[in-house]
Image 1 (cartoon, rainbow, N blue to C red):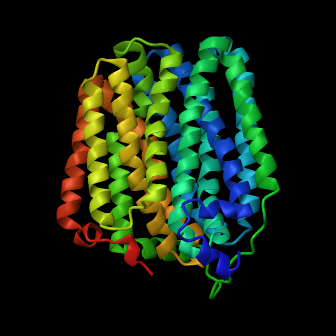
Image 2 (cartoon, rainbow, N blue to C red):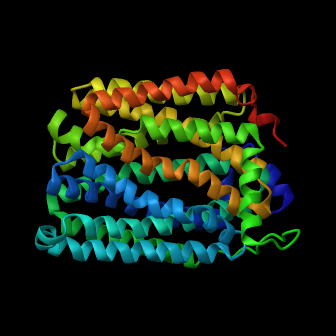
Length: 420
């Protein structure tokens, strides 16, 4: 895109869609996310149906988080050394292979469970954790290269919007297909949509890597990325706030239990519950595309995470299916404000040659918090009981927001509009 066109589109809410490379990349990401979100609902219901144990749902998250955390920093180093498009395509292929394995296992799980329990399912999920560890920094760095700097906020908004549309439709489709057509048909759809994503990733434009000032050893390279994040108070504060909000405030891992025991619905209802936060996030993202949160961004970030925690508390106390849907949708709206502000900060502050490493540090804060949050939710539910554990988590999120507002004044005063 020429400098003239880049300036011409900067006040257009749909500006980033004029870039063909972005359209191709985001389509592939939508298809893969749709498949992964379907798979998450299917595996969650499958595991709970086999075990009837909330803690087993938490172990799904842990089985993905452990390999993810083990290689996340190294994955960022790789994303700064090797072609990012190739990394995206290869890791997406791993997702497809795992989907095939889960499909095969769905036919033999009855006999397999008698000898091995749900351990085989956890093992397959652990490989998706490895793939995600390499996929995340590569795709984050790649998107920043194909979009001009003045459109970073716009690209973050639409990237979040497309991801959440997939996160709305994926769980709903997974739950409905599982409920009406069975587990085999559901996993077949996961395989098909994840395979379709490969067509877009492999045909995407290859972008040369930025030139690095000097060659570094792997440990020096990793420490450089870590120091960059920890020396930036605004970036560190935003990442930490989001991490703890998701870690304590996430109730998604326990939704199969709420659907079955509290709201008395089946996998179809679970699909809608899983989709509700992303549905709310899509609505908010469409609003923010026209009214980006570039003024008083730090204050808006704090209110958004606090609002998310409050929604989780009221969700835990709700015994009505439709009220629960509304509260989950509101939590998604609040969460998406945080996602877009954090994504814009990450793109604006990070040099091109460090994007992979900084994205991997970000993934340690944010990506792992979802899976560790799932484990925390399952463990807390076993110790405290289902509803008290979720109320506790939402309350902790609100307390963290208050502490951040008190001890991180630079984050509170942050203005995205003023970033250079």
